[in-house]
Amino acid sequence: MHFGLTDEQEMIVSTVRSFVEKEIYPHEELVERTGEVPDEVAQDIKRKCMDLGFYACNFPEEVGGAGLGHVDFALVERELGRGSMALTHFFGRPQNILMACEGDQRERYLLPAVRGERMDALAMTEPDAGSDVRGMKCFARRDGGDWVVNGTKHFISGADHADFIIVFVATGEDDTPKGPKKRITAFLVDRGTPGFTIRDGYKSVSHRGYKNMVLEFDDCRLPDAQVLGEVDGGFAVMNEWLYATRITVATMSVGRARRAFDYALSYAAERRQFGQQIGKFQGVSFQIADMFTEIDAADWLTLAAAWRLDQGLPANREIASAKLYASEMLARVTDAALQIFGGMGLMDDFPIERFWRDARVERIWDGTSEIQRHIISRELLRPLGA
Image 1 (cartoon, rainbow, N blue to C red):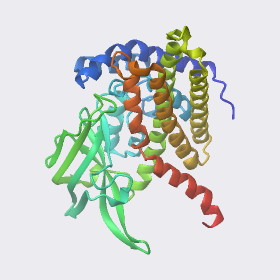
Image 2 (image 1 turned 90 degrees about the vertical axis):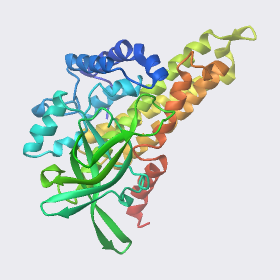
Image 3 (image 1 turned 180 degrees about the vertical axis):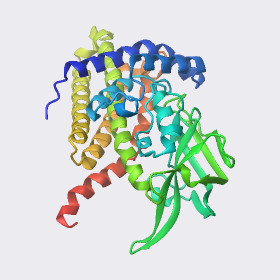
Image 4 (image 1 turned 60 degrees about the horizontal axis):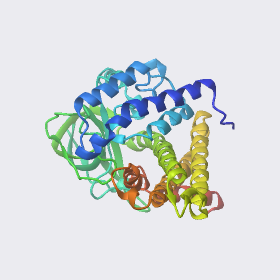
């Protein structure tokens, strides 16, 4: 396993980093102040991403994507992590599970999403079902040849801009030795479908402008043609998405940590107290050393997990380790950066307070740190019969 980047990978990193610095950074202050991404800014980012040939770069070439492997795509996401998530959202990366589309679904959902003609979002979380996915109450019942959906989803990122949503819904229940177990099915639901409403969600201190929405289903009728994958086969579809999104959280955490570190390093080299740069004080210099080491460790851990996927090797534990360590590393690095800046770190004259706020959610969404520890420990103990 070797992570000396190829010339092509160096080009990917350089191109995406330059894009983020030129096209994302200039709009960040506006998004932070207003909590909104102007439509013209969103469309400009999307158009320029297409011009670069990076739109839907996580999809294979046979459906119109750039066909990047997992390591290459991790490098893209790492650089995007340097910028505001509300803005990099329009550097289009449709949900990878759209590859499960079949027949007419490919023309209605998959291919338009890859071409940038339609935007998607994914809905799994509910008010009473976060980490406990099988506890979801949003339920679809059979009625003739259709499914009738009722229930609520919340914390749905990107739904404000989505033309359709991939929604995970309970479609049955099995009795097991451990009690009732929900069967889950994924549905493709178009905006404007009768009985389906998208409304504003909660105001978050993390990732301003990257809104979360509430989805409500009131006798929403969906034909079988809207099922993504197999009926009751939602977990198979879901696991494919979780692999990708947890690596994304890890890589973006690395990118954001590096940006915070760069600010802290420069500040430590310039800020003077007691007659010298604060970076010369051991209390600061040792923090700098620890920050740099932790970022590198998270970077390698994440690339190693992506490499295993490229090799077709099992990577569940490795992905969980990367998501756990990188997200918690980001919290430590942004906190240390803020401490180095002192009181100025809490002022919005610098982006440090934003990085600090944004870091907090990474340990929660796409599988909490506790869930990642459960995955890791389960894979280590099961072979020993525990």
